[in-house]
Length: 392
Image 1 (cartoon, rainbow, N blue to C red):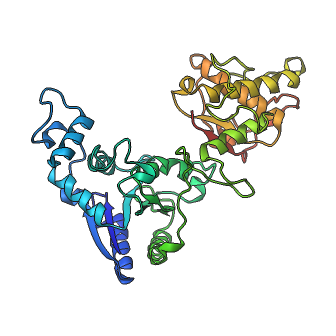
Image 2 (cartoon, rainbow, N blue to C red):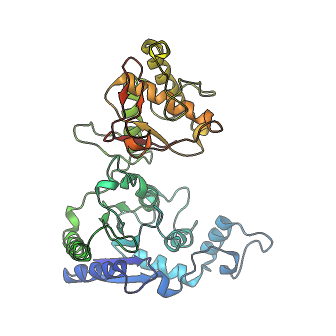
């Protein structure tokens, strides 16, 4: 068995470089052979450009896919690209080792994807997914992040780690790899320190040992459960099989708004209304909450309208091209319904009030501030309230 490790970190003495060597030693200790591409030390150019192609099909205009397909057909791919593809062909396992920078892989690794996974040799319209060039091979991400696992949990402050890793994992699945659950080394503190040096050192040693043990038991690692349509499936405890990760976040908020499981809450499903999102009562994401009993919205109208607006928003992806929406994951349907309406209404109030993207209850309002919910009395903001990230 053979493994190829791709390292994307500029410092040869970094913890990421150390984990890459740890992976190599652990695999070789169980009888594997390995190769390692240290992209920075190789001087790999992450920028796809016309100068990489000695015999272009069109010398007047650089079209990436056209030139990649032409070079694939003519056998004139850049030498460094052809060498990496050959290493991938030889490997039974691919490991990508990198740090999480600004919630993404380093540009060096993104450039590796751009240049190595070429149109023509690596993928075509008929050579992808289960028919991909690397079908039957396994791939795994091994990465480092600066904070704890709790901050990268399902509703964590740093973002759901499975959502953040979805693009890289899906790109690997696109070219045929069976993608293993990633190894994430949490709390690798560098410039920003939250812990004592001795605590960090102990943590790093423990995670090094965890990576070695993980690779020594590869057959026990679960695969990332992509759905046939490309959705990343993830089940929370007690949930049925087959629910996609994005759908789980959408349905969690939709159910809180009174939308039944048989309705059109899923993004793009039949029955979702189109057209502009209708307004909703002002609230913490779009102006002040209603004040006084006379200003209380009628729950019989707010809840259905908020649910309808939420369904409309999910069914009209183009209206949310600007980014993500934070929606509260609350059990109380009336409160959730009102908040969903406020979240949608906030989109049209940018000029009047800056939007807030809460990561905790403190982001909604100052300490002790009250707000009104449909069908309920004023209540203080709960600093422990959790939120659900819904992609647009």
